[in-house]
Length: 256
Ligand code: PGA
Image (cartoon, rainbow, N blue to C red; front, side, top):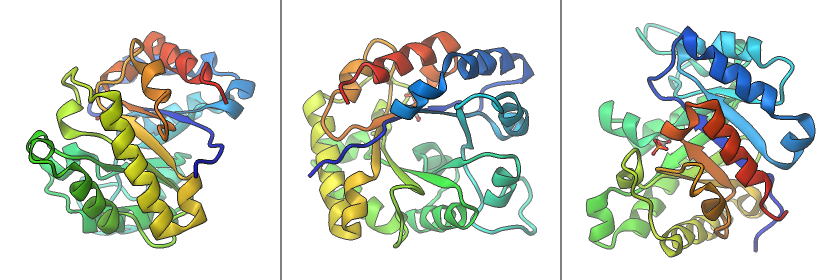
């Protein structure tokens, strides 16, 4: 049921990074060659304040640049928010939506996440839609049911493998150093794959499924070696160029 998929290594800088960090971004941009990027795509999502300068820095690099969130509307009276159009205007090509920190800190529902993903698609951005269970939900054996609900409500009808990436991020694994067992990740990803195929048909076969949550240079190779894991969404360990590049190398080493 699996198809050949170009993996994606995505860095989510969250609320980290000032102009000083541009040296790290430049180092990452310079390390990735076009030939490598044909095998594994690399993406950095800096804070919105660095978005435009980052895309300018990456002009001659295959490193893709994205944002960490967008508003569901194109424009209007929404103080502090940015729209998908604004991200595209800064030459960003991706946007993360529905990260668990936004679901938690800003009470974002899956329905809102879907509206944001639709806004991303309308602006020709690729939406990285995040899903994942809390520790309590896992302990109660609800992981698959939670994922099913989140996918059903968050993923727009008509999503394609080009404009949508799904990131499985167990909430309890984010920033904690705790990583699920490989069998647990495999189970979640296998469910996501079959659920997406049921919903979207052929598209679901080639949609990229990322794992996120305490991924780092030491565990990256093992994580991307799990079936149906088509890359990583990395927070803390994406902040240093040396770590990002090491994880990128681990992704490249995966047999095609
Ligand atoms: P982490 O975060 O790699 O720091 O655990 C991952 C994420 O939240 O995307």
